[in-house]
Image (cartoon, rainbow, N blue to C red; front, side, top):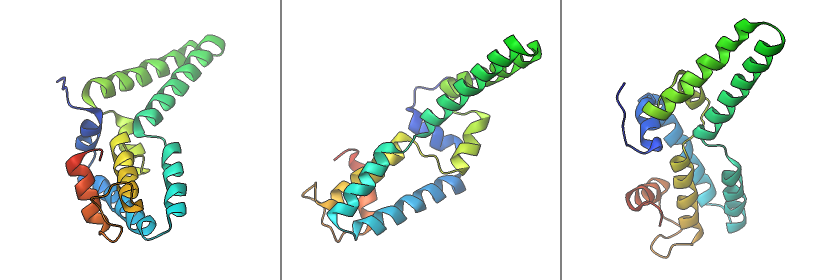
Length: 155
């Protein structure tokens, strides 16, 4: 088991099949193109939606803790064999923490759960198209804006 010091968002994308990453990127570009052509009020509404979007890390943590607590309660009240469930779930969570991958990751990525970085990229691209950053014009193509956001990180 190799330990890496790469940021989680890189490890998650590297652990996700290219087709799923591409679908997530395509959806993001569609959102940027759609909202980029809308009013500032529409962009503001989308930014509020992005504030509420759960990143993959949060989904994995809540899922793991829910299953682990359920297994503990059932193990304590129904049948001790339920105690296997927290052991399995917590080993998946540890594996994700150490390697950036675990079996549920593939399922949640297929369901279009994004990394915090992916969400922030859409947020910054929309802010740029809204006019928050002087160097990017509203008429700039979605792909170009996303490339600029990715190249410079947070503008």
